[in-house]
Image 1: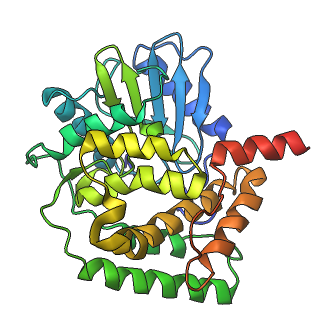
Image 2: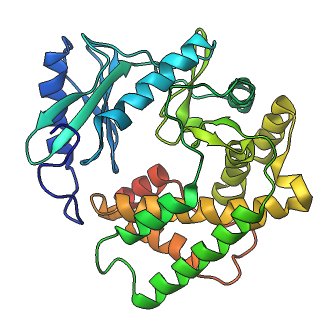
Length: 326
């Protein structure tokens, strides 16, 4: 049935770029779109492709993704548009995901290509402020934000041998400690959060800043979205002035809340584990990213977590440096 992997999902459950390209070509034609010249924008668990001849972006969801989960992203985008926030409209003959059947059943969705103009800090702050002020909608199937459960599942699903038994034990201990602190934190009123509020998920359009990529959109603490720019400064070294501009426009500095304890003791470990897991998963198909994944793991295994800055490298930079060194 659609949404169920044809081959059982396990550590072998990795879609290659060639497989996802085939899924895009097959489903694009069925959507009335021309997939010629498709360019892979992002790999990882899901693959995103730009279709320049159609003005569209295709998302090939990871094996095992249900139709409902893939469709939810489209519904969120349509809700945001109704609320005055720019988001990618679905394109093609139908808004529902199409299924490509090969080694796996793959869900593929298509949306308008909003371009690639990156936001300034003020753009991201203003669109998040708008989002966080919206009433929580009914009927979108938004869950309560729970990053710890998702991280536990992703850690469990890593291929055998990714971690030594000692590293696995220590990471699970860090997760357990963080879960306890998260549950004990008073977050205040919850709202709709993007869940992955980085500049890469915001695009400046002629109609204003747009949000994209709603896999993690949920009902949760606004502090999660607000911590992402501070995290980028502390971990990846983005200029301090950019974070100052962000907080000035949004009107809140989450890194200073409760003398910084919420940011440091609750949000930072979750961001850190997630950022390491992303590269641990990604490096299965992109081996050049393994050194950066190891660097992040070394930081995580410090007890306590070291003070900032961490001097981590964003995935794109780590890959470019590895290729240049060859």
